[in-house]
Image (cartoon, rainbow, N blue to C red):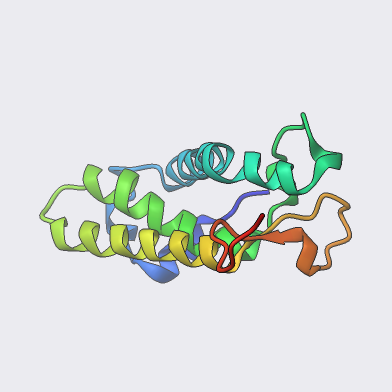
Length: 138
C-alpha cells in the first residue's frame, strides 16, 4: 500500500513539466520509507508500551491509515526529494512544503496516529495513541 500516488501528488503541485528530471514514483516510495523509519524511531516504541500484546513486534506499514499519511508523504517528497532536484529556483516552494510537512507531523503527534493491529479497518480510540499527554501520569 502506497501512502500516495503520482496522480495525487500532481493534484497538489503540478510538476509534470519536470518529469524528465525526476521519477515521481521512486521519490514517493523513498518518502514513504523515510516516514516509516521516522515512525519506528519516535512512535512505535511508545505505542508498544501502551499495547503489550504487540511487544517485540515490528511496525507493519499496511496497518497505518493511508488517508492519514497521504498528504504528509506528498509534502515530504516535494520538500526533500523532488523539488531540490529540479532545475530552476524552487527555494520558496521547498520551504513551504517543509513547513506543511512539519505541521502535518505535529498534528498527527497531537491527535494520534491510527494503527489497526486487529485489521478491523475501524478506528477505535484505544488504537489511536498520541505522543503528548495533556495530563500527568503516575
